[in-house]
Image (tube, rainbow, N blue to C red; front, side, top):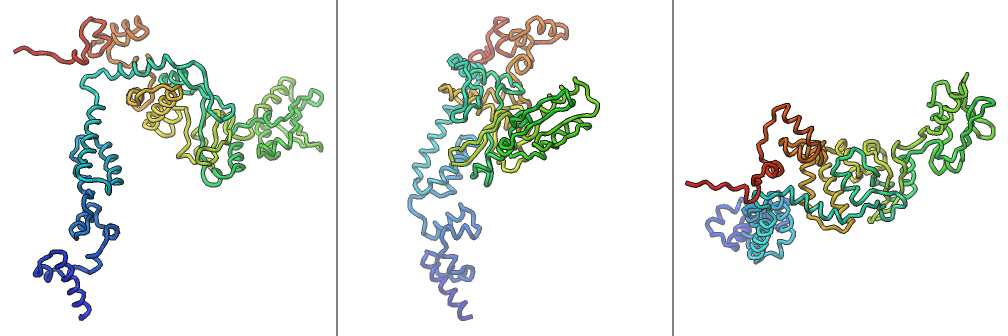
Amino acid sequence: MELRATVEEEVARELTRMGVEGGIAELIKGEFIPAGLTAEFDELLEMQVGEAYAEDIIRMLGRGEEGEVKLGDIEVKVDKSELSGKIKEELKTKLRDVRMKLSEEKLDAILKKAEEKYEEAKVEPREAVGIVAAQSIGEPGTQMTLRTFHYAGVGAIYITLGLPRIIEIVDARKKPSTPAMKIKLAGEYALDRNKARELATEIEETYIRDIKSKIESSTEDMCVWVSLKEKELERKFIKREEIEEKIKEVGKDVLVETMEDGKLRIHVKRMSFHELLKLEKDLSDKLVKGIEGIKRAIVRRDADGEYMLYTEGSALKKVRRMEGVDFSRTTTNNISEIVDVFGIEAARNVIIKEMMDTLEEQGLDVDARHVTLIADAMTMDGEVKSIGRHGLAGGKVSALSRAAFEVTVDNLLGAAMYGETDELKGVTENVIVGQPIKLGTGAIELVAR
């Protein structure tokens, strides 16, 4: 009891020193412990006191730094600003990081500048954003080369860039002309070159003909002879038993014999000459290892010193469950695969990234918002649509607009047969009929009283 009384007296003295009246200090002294009165900011947070409240408590205790902006002030002032939700969250994070250097005046100045920039970035009401985006990409597009460039430092894996790549993207082609993947590796595979090489051989398609095998058909004994090179098998991490198993899969009646010199004798009972030639071709084209469609996989070291794989060919689904692959960081330039595996939002992001990368590679400076608008238009219905008569242009409500784009007669005949009505709300149809378009100054109608 004596110890408790001593502690309470100490608390009362500390409260009085902090400016609490003597009578009140006597009443509330039992509610505190001395440690609570000398707690630092980090300790209060550990006691699960909210950041903004901890800041207020510290300040009430008289230990707040002069000129320092409170976390609560940042929250309140940013929330009151005219910025969008995403910008507010980003701004709060960045302001918290530099809070110690901020004053009330500086905080107000930053918010004022951010609001000004945000207003400048906004589109004017009834602005023809589609035309501006088309012009902003189309005009620099005339400066693009028609050649195909390859990735720097990735050997002979060629990749379509420049104008052909832009056309591929906006046409929403199911398969790009040069599909490729960048496969990031996980764990020891990212640090050990031999492990990375072993994984590359697991992914790269390997046919019997690729192992420098000699495949010959013999009409004398009506069989096919296969000579395997041991060094090539070691290099590809393939065992002879695996090859024999794969050969047996060619047909149910196929027999495989291993001769003394290591050659394989493959034959089928009662075989014609035509069947013999077919067996020779089937053996040559038999996939022994790897993923069909991935012609090559090259091991390279990235900027962080980790090993990664570049592939010629793309098969995102098949790579997904392979040991050693860090799938969360693996990318492909095949947008239709991205839709199947990751969904439409990911495809939208890849369209933006691929287009921006292609433009930047050509040294062209295009505002990302124009490219974003095109990506949004292509993906807004939940699937990737091309910008053409089979996609966005062909899906317009206006018959006149569709007719002005392509296959004019077919569109007009179809509209006439089905009795379509044109509301004349778009640009093209208003130009055709010779009246002001409903954009910019044409969007305003004056009514006389």
